Length: 344
Image (cartoon, rainbow, N blue to C red; front, side, top):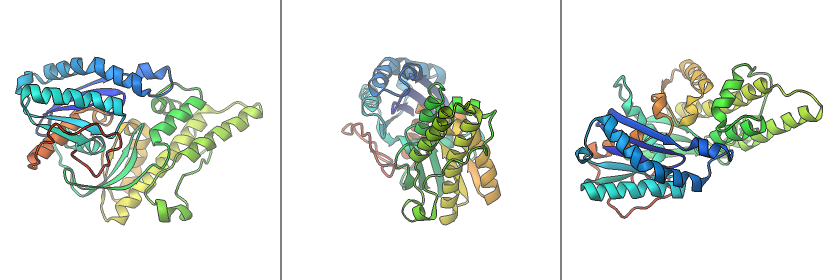
């Protein structure tokens, strides 16, 4: 199974055989976006056009197969940036027709959960599970009863995603894009308890309507106001403390709500996915919190946490093994595809 992922700024092509990873090639246009301080959709789409054929060729070579040995193709049809998605969808349809193989259009977010089937230890994910997906564009809490047929959205961000908040706070601290790795680096020398930044949607008045939803816009504003007050007073801004305290607030909210979902639904399992999982503090605190709560924690290999084609191929393979019919050729790119639609 060959998988294509072009939902944002990374052109991912992966090849799997069942649940065995054969190739995972990623071409990122991040450096092109860094000059703008964030992802520019048009730039991303053009970068995908340039990278898609070389990425497919590289994945075929890495897997040690011929292109005509591919049995089926899976592609991200949404959610994501419309122009970027169109490149992957167009390439997948062309390959499907040229090779005469079935095509599966799959959900990008569910793909992050599907990445867990590619673990090197071959341990199988036990279902149902709660899944927390945290990336630059998405922060979602899911109840996964069945990977290919039953995924429920429990909550999501109502404004900025966690990754967006990292990027925006990094910018106001004078750190480069993307913000996550740089805040992680600066926070290593800071005190996470130095500043008590707000935890959005965690107050009792918010939990009735937004028990599993996330909000990081207020946190971003609080950091900006705190920094401005220091600067107006002529004081030096302690970047390490600000970064560490901000990061702690984000991670605290993410895990508090995820563990609450596990408890509320009686599911002692939590799976993490998405690029923000590469953040050291996210993994560290997740291990501490889940161990204290008696919850099993699963994190896919870090190379499969960011957007990649291997997770899309893995989900496609699971759909085939479960007996699902191909998608055909009449689907389109859907930038707002709901997570409950696993296959378009």
